[in-house]
Length: 178
Image (cartoon, rainbow, N blue to C red; front, side):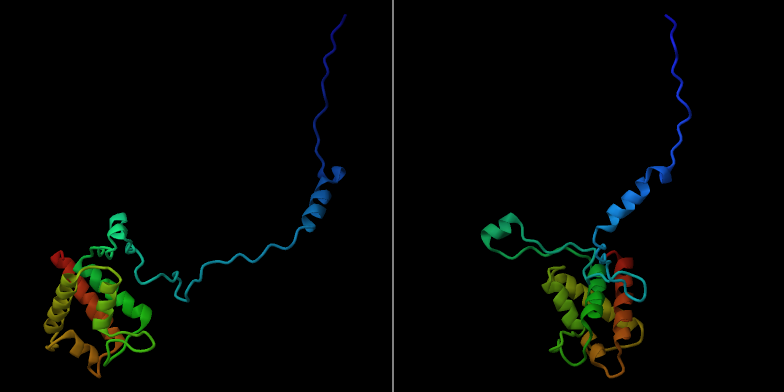
């Protein structure tokens, strides 16, 4: 018995001949239009809006804190970090002169430092050392005032001046390793 070898011809796929494309398009047309995908808000300057404490851990009570019903221990931060957080807080909530805070939520330099402390970043000693750094920068730049609050409330001081002061004090603290 002779063996015959079956040799198929070349395989040719023609999408139009099968009608498969038309069938898939008709099926997809029965689906509702996709909902608009919400993207994160991007500010006009090109960066995503972030919270003032981005990059720093949130204050969370431990199991022992919850059992003993004591407040959570503060997150340790350096003096330089405290000054950066103070500047961020002022930027996020606004700046005011002549008051610790106002009804709109704006704060002065001292109010921002107190708010950063109240949110659990650092200790009162950290705030005291940060205010010393601010005073050092004020005196080094030829502004001999009795406290940072006097500088904050001066009629010639602008919010940008306060941010610049905090940046310089932060850089000084960073260079000192504190």
